[in-house]
Length: 326
Image 1 (tube, rainbow, N blue to C red):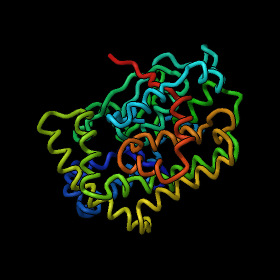
Image 2: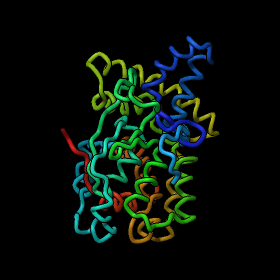
Image 3: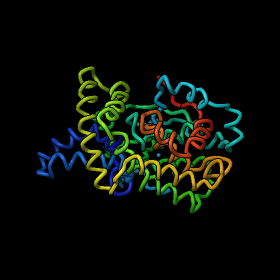
Image 4: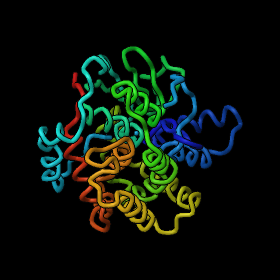
């Protein structure tokens, strides 16, 4: 989930976290009704369009895999052989790597996971600050009230796609982003993210499955965990139906499968869109899919499409998290 939303929606506002907060604001401002605000909030979250509050002017997206008992085998594979990872990518110069990186995030936010996929792939150590979706007290210091916010050696970066492009330019200053890479990064933000919410919250049981993880891994008190799980799941079940209508989705799973197959065909037999190693488009697709991979929607996607082989290769080369735990 998120707090902002790329493109026309915002890339950060976590719908399940902000619907209550924004509902209060709307009543104070005489804005549209709460139902519309809930839909808008989730549009920001999974809408693929980030808020254009560019704190960093340079123009240039992972929750750590949800480990269910059924996925333990995949997790061991995902860690992969680090020698294989090194063969597949060009390590940046140590002088170009950032020294202090802090990510302000929501754990299950697809846009935050885009950023984490990039950091993990490049073995850039980073600290994580989990933002409370109701109070957002952890980011009161910032003018931007949407996640992800990445602070790199004291500089604040916002918007997931801009963040990873900025970082890529820092550590590989001579690299150019090609037309194909740009096209598919845009596809992630303008299309792929739109089909996620209607699938994650397709049924009440799937909504509860997702919010069970969110409640247990977010920054919540015991009482808030119960509220988040049950109230959040109920709200997002309703919101997902609104988004389904907004984006003219008639069959949620068919739309997800079609998106997965579209990406698989784009590979044209290559291991990655970037060829022998992932490029920013690969990392963006992988990042936004990470939060759903071991939920029912993600399991169905891998079972019914050809995306599984690419996803497993990505798990291998991205490897484990480079997050620094306090």
